[in-house]
Image (cartoon, rainbow, N blue to C red; front, side, top):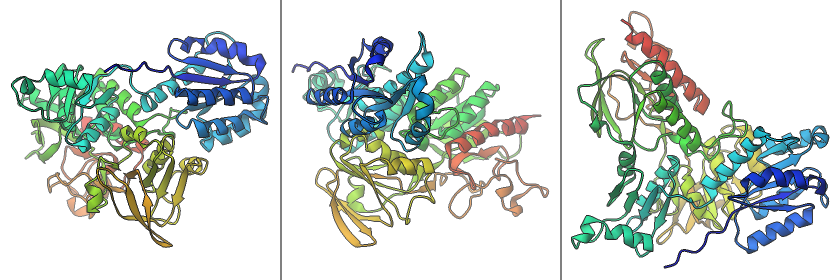
Length: 562
């Protein structure tokens, strides 16, 4: 079988004629990997895009000038072209002369999600701030919209497509490039022929995962098996080691604690049952996190925090679930953390396992999880939604981010919410972006009450103010609200009626010691702390979770002080 030649992606630039030489020169640095296509008026830009679509050439970025022959303002052309190329990143290019006149409308367009950013056309050499923005958007497009050029992991599908979906989701969230191959492909035949089971005459167990990262092939792979192959297991540690701080969970709270704990001299170990990043790591784009004015995906935020923590010496193990904690009998003795990979002895423990999305509980749809039905954003599945009618259930920020992201690929996205509107549960910036995205519609006071399909999701039954309706559906993404991941905690760690962990002054007074509550983020067990979404009274935001994780380290130091 001959592998078809890959089509080089394009960058389409449409600016007034007098700016073409500068813009063409600035983007020349990207010409090794992209075709740089330039036009000097609106109709020329339309023709470039029509030709790219006809040639099936992916377009990574649209750069359109504010002042442009053929349209009143460049924003209008960007809107028009984006309907044809919804996955392309959008930059409005302006000049110093236009800047003051355009600024108010550009800010409004940015706030409504009509553009990804606006940039001044460079006035001199080495405008690296300009190119930092361009590179970030090209990187974001390359990860989410294109086939990886270099594969760190190869998946040979067969058997459970749902498990393949879970493996892909894990790899996407960890930032590991991969590709799926059928067993009868050239790559599939090669990988399978090298399996000891096949060489001995047996049939392979699917899916098969071949990872050059760890020089290992896994038969009958699961997402957790892949995680342990890539990131190791606590089984490699000496069971008699006494660890200063064991962090359970690697969302923003756990990663912040790992960074600050390790950087301040604590021997820090993080264990995570799923992919590093937690629920926040599934977010396609977080736009309201301090310090990232152009936004950052949950995957990249988690990836950077993971690198930062390991740089300071923290040890992070993914695919390893905590199964229990045996609290210390008395102060000064270690807590014992029981995991799938063995026991860890910890002088202090931070529980940051967060929350999990509630299950829909409709059996025919539960059977299609990974086959068109997904819990969470499942960014790895978004590219497969091209041309489909997709439904997102949920009214929080995660649901809004998923809807905006899916609209890049799907023919339509319907956001179903239980409440009459989104304002009580979703950030204003996301509501504005949803309003400005033609492919997204919102159905208030609506629930999914049924659905099904053959080998994949085909239809849903929706119940709303006008009764029950059956609709065609190619994808269902469920972000239904959250239940705390704390059922495995010992009874000594007191929780509220919903299962969220009490800390500090939230702890009922009958559990105070000598009339004083525990420290701010300390549970009812001295030396066991809780931070992030699992904690009763938390704000359920990335920034607050990060702050709580970092603040825990000072409390751990105080607890460990002689």
